[in-house]
Amino acid sequence: MSASFAVNGRYLTQSISGVQRYARNIVRALDQIPESEGATVISPHGTSHPAYERLQALQTGLSTGYVWEQGELPIAARGRRLLNLCNMAPILKNEQIVCIHDTNVLSSPGSYTRGFRTVYRCLQPLLARRADQIATVSHASAQELARYLALSPDEIVVLPNGHEHALSWKPDPAALPAELPVHPQDRPFVLAINATAPHKNIRLLIDIAPRLEELGINVVIIGSDHIIRQPKLALPGNVYPLGRVSDDVLAYLLDQALCLAFPSFTEGFGLPLVEAMARGCPVVSSDCASMPEICGNAALLASPFDPAQWVDRISALKASDHLRIELAGRGREQCRNFSWQKSAMGYLELLQNPIRPRRLVPRSKPEQFQITAVFATLRRPDVVQRTVKHFLSSQRLSPKSVIVSCATAEDAGDLVHNKAVKIVTGPIGLATQRNTALRHLGPETDIVAFFDDDFVAHPDWLAEAAKLFCDDSQVDGVTGV
Image (tube, one colour):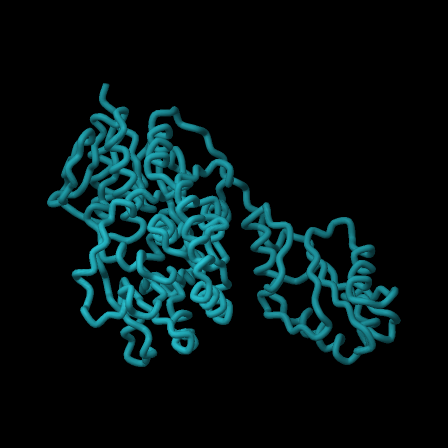
């Protein structure tokens, strides 16, 4: 019996990044599963397909790119459920599965061109409504998709990247420049993977390179050289940009590196993390987005906003053979949690099962929230009255009420005559005064925002905080906004 599904093969026409590598490896794994026999990978004319054992290749249409995907692909896939593995899919196609890897185009718009942002912002919400099923690559990404696309998080299927491909690489330094200091007799180096996108945060590693030079550590950067070749950006002497390299060269570099440094602000998954772990290369990673989920206890984590933490973690690895060996062992165990074969089986199950009904989560609007702003103060009437007056006059989203909590009414200055402000008194101490204010909240209050008496809030402070609660119903509190 032949499988009745098709795969969107547009990825075969694109340059290989993490998303395209995901598609290629999922399809390769599907090709090894007997139940996939007869399924078709559909691509534009002129596409080079790999050799398949069970899948079939179909080249069709007169166009390429978005035009082919939106116009000609749904015709070619008529009557079959369509698997789309690279964020996009034809809007007019019924019965399809769509993998959306991340929300970076929404959360980090500066990393993408205006045209790219426009296409994704227009089409992805429609896909979220029309697709049989939305999949993604990590639980962190599922939470973000739920926030931006008004989906229910528990109805987004998580089918992560795998690690097996990195085990098949054959380390080969032959293509490396002879003078590049990345060999066992050279001093240690940190490996980084560069990309043009600002959210990859490669600049952090360039900024800490002088500190690493003091420790006798080089920085080797592979991948796109757009950022590191900017005319005004002078690279420290211990930074070595390589540009793009083959998988076998990457394997050699991972095998020799002190660690992989991965300082991204956000990632849907972070495939280089599991590639490094599979090769036994220690990892220093950002502590946000999907990265703690992917790394588990098999990496050293650091804030992408704190360069000193990265110097500290890298220095610790250089100083301790035991730590490096321990992290390498943990990494080999951790990467086994991520399998192309298991994810391919998950897609096959989705493709074979009947349509699962999904619900869109109704969104509240920020202005529907009843917000109370609380200012605790002590013996600074001039300060608090200026702060509160500015707050009331500048916030784009007005609070329902404002409470000033103090020891005596005199601490509130002329705010005692302001009908928009409620003055409450009680024992002193920041936590105690805030608790006093909480006891005076109205029953209709949805959000409480605590402010210092000299904090000058951005005009969008309340609006952005309220929007966060609108976007993600699982958020109970925020800090540091």
